[in-house]
Length: 341
Image (cartoon, rainbow, N blue to C red; front, top):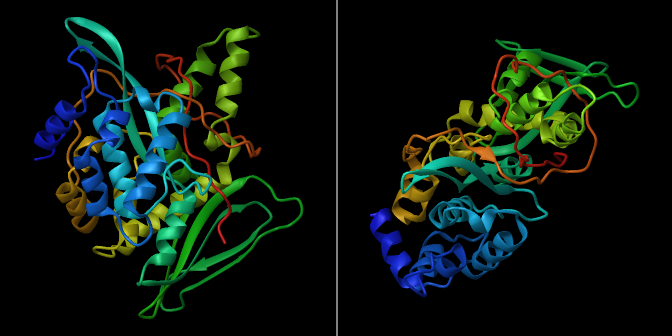
């Protein structure tokens, strides 16, 4: 159904047979506007979604070069979750990824759009949830006071150190449920690093640093790009986001948007077909039932195609798990996060 709809949109949006249609062409079609209206809720109107889509495609490097269907699907997904994409709120992010594909018997660069949810996006959804009364999350560092116990005497205590706070050692997310009860998820450093090392952005840039010749200009450029990634700049916030996401999956609140968000957040990997989300029926099934359309296999692993990183310094951890891999020169894109209330 989604493919047929998009083929119809493509035919209607193409101004001339020789000119490929773009995301801007799609956004002008009645079918797309009707699709936005079908999934828009009380947090985002269809008109606002169209405005956000146009602004994001104009301001985000390479987003207008992405497969228009993937961009449209990502916007529909943001609309279904009620999160503003690519705005100062940092709730959700549409990220262009470049990969190599064969067209007419030759290899070319193609761009796909991927969808990521920011730290603030998860917190926003948690505050909206009728099942969650309060939510708290934080990185845990050396010098902080932290105690957690499970069982008949379940408890969690946390006090952040305001002076001489050391390196990251873990993260946690704690919730009070509306129906009563308290739950918490605690991630040790080792698990946080495993999550970090699944990020294509982080790994690709780490490999580029490793492959560059010592003292060379290539090394300086690669190091600058690596140091601008959120897993370096905003390590503590990324750790807290990982705890929130893990906790949301553990809660298993059927039909709750925060559970759906934990399923569709890609964290720098292509895990489902974003383009299919342009079909309102597929989108509703993904959000309510957690059923995601499978992604077609890539000719090569997608690589982030543009830089968009926050500018607040953070703690730098050693690069882990990057030995003996082919270096891939890329420019990173990832999401940035603010502090949880």
